[in-house]
Length: 112
Image 1 (cartoon, rainbow, N blue to C red):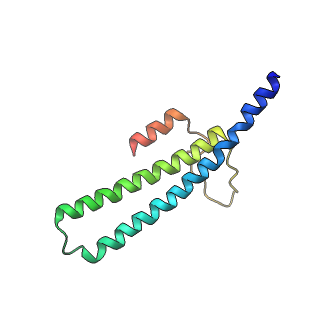
Image 2: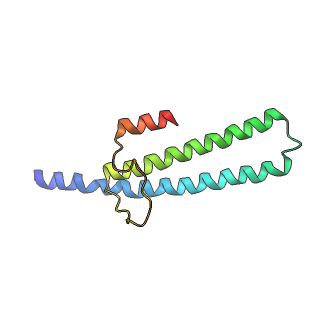
Image 3: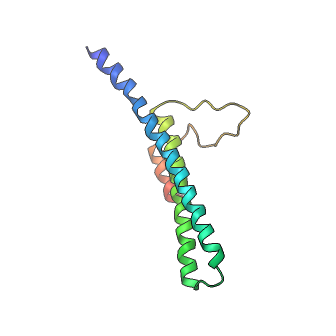
């Protein structure tokens, strides 16, 4: 009975895989919103007040930081809780993959 429960709990980690995939969809939605904001601002850039432009730029920076957070949580969470990422040798690999635990993730988020 104990072995069954342990195996079931260990296998349940795969329930997180669709959640991490959902974060990648959220990243796509965020990128679309980012470029929508840029397309909306560019035609009006010369008629905008400086304070309005600064607010738009801060919004773009905010979206960029959230996107970076999504990537870090998506990859480190998947690697820490679901399965190791098997990336082919032909592709560039992020140097922090496989090395990030919860504490280092918090530090990276705070640094960005």
